[in-house]
Amino acid sequence: MLNIRITLLLMTAVTLLTGFTWGFGGDPCRDAREQADTLESIRDDVLIRQREAKILELCPDGAAAHYVTALQFERVGNTDGAISEYRKAQLKDRGFARASGNLGLLYAQKGMKDEAAVELAKGLGAFSDPRYHKAMAIILVERKVYSLAAYHYGEAVRGLPRDPSLFTGLAEIHMASGQPDRALEEYQRALSIDPGFDKAHVGSAAIHLARNDQDKALAQLKAAATATPGNREVHLMMAEIYEKKGDQKQADYEYLLGGKPRKTAAAPSALSAPAAAVPVVSPTLDKDIEGLKAQLKEQPESVTAYEKLGSLYRSAGRDDEAIAAYREAAHRNSSNSDVYVSLGALYEKREQLDEAVVSYKQAIKVKPDNADARLRLADIRNARGFYQEAVEQYSEFLKLKPESPDIQLKLARILARTKEAGLAIDAYLAVLKHSPDNVDANREIAALYKNRGAAEKAIEHYRMVLAQQKDDMETRNSLVALYVKNKQYDEIAELLKGTVELFPDDPNNHYKLGLIYDFKKDYDNAIASYKKAIELKPDHARSLNALGRVYMKTGRLSEAKETLELAKKADPNLEETAVLLNNIRDEFNPEPRKISKGKKSKSKKSKKGAKQSKATAKGAAKKKP
Image 1 (tube, rainbow, N blue to C red):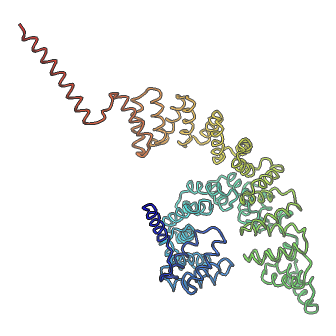
Image 2 (cartoon, helix red, strand yellow; image 1 turned 45 degrees about the horizontal axis):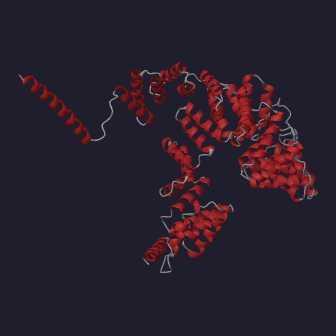
């Protein structure tokens, strides 16, 4: 009976503690508000919709309901509607931090930086949302408040460690603070996340150019051009480098791709703008335009006249009028696919990407084998995160132009990003079939093989990378990890020797090499490596600790003690150092430790008593006659 009572009491306690209101006067608006704060933690779309419906049901006109409505507006792209609803939520509940933070994000998108900063600060007062930190950091960088911006970028990285733009943001802060080496490190971190992140390549290239290292700058820009062929800034930077190097032909070609063709420019490639997009400028341009306008007065439905008029306007740089003419041609069902591509390109120039997408799709509808339309559409869909459609369009482009390793590489990267590892590997192999020495393709396929446990294939491709770029530390570190896993210690030693030769002033490299020698019991070389690291950085705690450990192994206890004391001073938190020092003290003082005070006193008394007994006995013996 007692057990039953206890069980019932426990069940009652559980029921009471689960938050069930039992219908006794609970506040539905408060419940809705509490549930609204949990929406950000839900990852399942179905559960999100169910929770939102419940919130709207609980308190249809409350702050939480307006917040949910704002979220729904955001999902369909109605920014103004979302802003209005977030404001209503704030009016209902001044302390609604989520509404403030999200409103701040939308203000930032619209360029309302002052308003955005205020609302983001309110949101961050309650939630350390990485999106809020990122938006705040961008605003602070623009205001040149670099220390605070760096803090917010750092907080954003905690929640979004795979966002390469955060590291390029930090790099820009380091550049503004006159620290190019640290900026390069951040750019490299961005590229380790996304090897095709063009902003990191461009930033790195700018640093190399400032140091007059044109070859390294050019390598970075080539990688950026492979990832984003439409980036005009990249092509113009490459053109300037080629011009300085005296390669005018290549410079002219890059100027053309960058939108600034020179008189000696090379003919555009098959991947550049279509013939209709870059027409030959007529010396009688104005006269030709007036002639076409006159023709249209007589033949207002002439599709061809509108097509020609659009091309003339575009060649004259009169984009608004060109768009109007091309739209008239499209309205009259033009069957010229290049007209739609030209219209799409003009929309892209104005950053009207939705309109550009419609135009490119129409170009494909009119002419399914229009490779340029498919490529441009794929680039937009890729940039906006519509990866399935991007894959479809890149695949169709490659059917039309199979000898395009740069596009094949784009396709491979999307497949890798969307976790289609098998298909991604096939795509990378297609790139390498055409360009076996492609550094990026080898590095990226190696990472895929590594993740799938195919160590030998990963090692093969990483070695191909190092054959081209010996100073690629990311690849060297990946190879070391694979060699350690395979217990290939000779290979590790050889690789680390090469690293030390390339970067002799980095104490960490000497320390790592020392560890391998240490493991192989080559203590002389281990000591030499650790000492070199300490010579470069006297307070290199790990090297001091490791050197002390080797001294202990080789019986040099006094040197070990001295070195470990230095390690402890350099880093008091190194646990191994404390353990090693205790072991050395035990070696110097080998007496067994006493366990308790009671036993100590007892032992001392017994010894003292024994001595006294002996003394008494001796005295007695002397007194005997």
